[in-house]
Length: 465
Image (tube, rainbow, N blue to C red; front, side, top):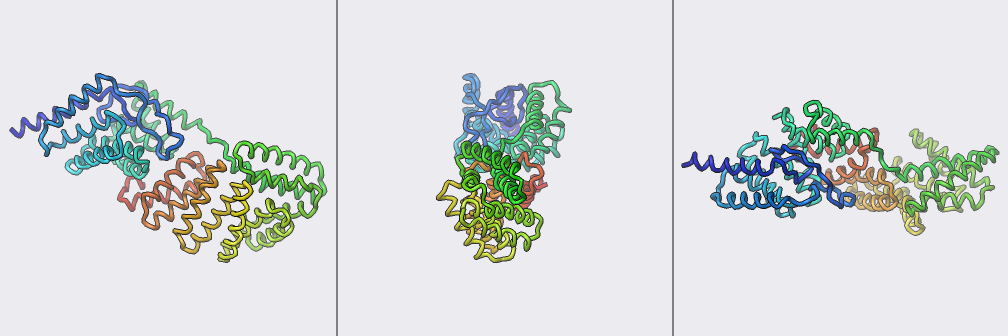
């Protein structure tokens, strides 16, 4: 009797695999997936932290009839159904439609229960991994992606020959912004499958990874204007090179006009307009030249030299707030280094208020970031997170995605320190996506280290590695 019941349960699971073998409801492949079909993304990816994983298009009528029939058979099994029946029921429900959050929790729970009984069942691990990715989307909680990555890496060791598992591992790495590792995975996949439709998709994804370029970040344009072109203009005026000064000011003006039109942020444009208001002023020129000198000293960790030059710059530019704010904020950073936190925070609060009142959004973001850094240095982590959040919102408004990502790295680290793993990983995940092309960014390296630490804290050793 027990034997016949077990055979019936296995039959239910086999029928489920057969019904779904040529159907692709999600970007990742379910266990038993064979026939290839492309996955067209659903709309809305650009506004989501965890992008859509459901493939566009509804199941065919025949597929819906098959899934309904299977659901009836699964429902006829006893409450304490075997792992085969529980797994079939969970996978069929997941395949039928994009799950609502409670249903996603139910499916993940059923598959994790199966894994508790069969911890080395590679098919169950794969389906649980897909379910976690689906839940990450519907709940917009990337922490599930961390667990899924750990399961994908575990599968690579348990069954290195499975093309389904290898495909899913590459997709997951790509989704986490691990472009180099995803590229390695796609190349490895293509050494074992070079002719199927799945191989064609792998090849397209690999090509996209190799040739994708990040959108131009307004941060670099603003910094080139404020931190390079205007100080160079000032130095040219001081040196008496009017021709060079004229060329530099025209270039700064053209870039600032374009930037303000594209983003609505006037931080750079108002600085250029201040220079245009009195291009013959030697005080103005010497102040900007001193800013360039002080900034170079700060970058070189010569903080005493930086403070002298920046103080001189701020004094010379004091009548023009849209210019004076830049050396003043850098002086705030010197104050943080010297643990003069109250002085630094006073400078940043003034810069934040003036930025918010005059459409200098990026300036306000830098000021709020400085406030967060000062508070973090004092171990006032919750206050620091609040100000980092203000900074992030300003950078997003200004289109400065890399600065927003850098702030996300710091929010994630502090949230993790406070024990809020879910928020910590969400912030680091957002940063990794934004910094995927910035392979040499110190913030990306920090994000990877923090994610590794959070993974270890969650017991996800494979993902940490």
